[in-house]
Image 1 (cartoon, helix red, strand yellow):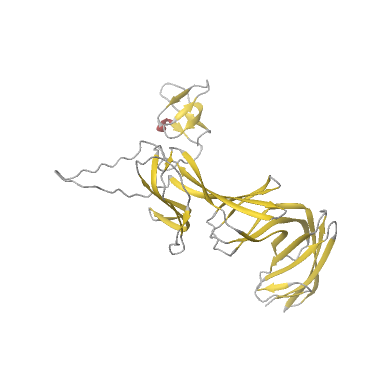
Image 2: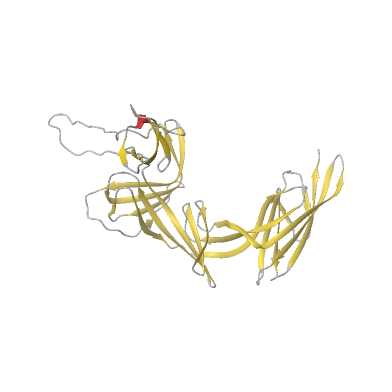
Length: 342
């Protein structure tokens, strides 16, 4: 709700519209531009507020028995300290390079001098009040009073499908901040850029443009995170990838490519009580000054459908074909789809 308008009700005054500047201490700015703190119960909000968003921080007190000695360890799970990888895929004439940073975010009001650190990534399910939460990245740390520094993040053995990375040097994690550390530089293999279309089968024709796709493999496991693609020094798109094992393809789209278009026409060849036969024709046009490879995929929502066509393959209920479009040229592909009616 920070930065949004709310209504303030105060005794002896008319209700007034104010802006909630900071939620943790209910700091508002009134119509005169003045800042002050108010009580949370005096605010009327345009939508349902969170169950736990007001009031003081919870405090727990632990009392040792008289004359007891020794050390204690307090362990707890917090969602206020987290991390996520951030990738940059740099594409050039000689291929592509992938680099990654680790963004470690401290959402608390406390600063940490962090000692041994282990970063966990993967499908980690957390239980909270009977509800399951899925997190793409977890952060496990031991706080110390050692001087701050930073070192390399080293990959460890996986933990039953959870990726583990160790940072054994201390560093500072200021309050309400994000610390970015060098993460890894995986080796990119089998990189390719292409255009594509992934859609479901329809008895009606249509037209449009294809999507820009990139595909590559990495020699290292990749935790899920955001990816920024740079070509010739320019940012050409951003997306997210899920965790990927070494040697598995990473395939993603960066949006529409208006220079490569398609016209899809459908002709009903026959229709009986037992089956319907359709002829699907794609006309692909490339207005670029260089050739481009295109991949077309259609999903036929019938497990017994049969597809026939030169250069067209069928894998289960998915139909696909690949073509290379010449610079400033066009290519036509036709296939038939037989769909049982019973």
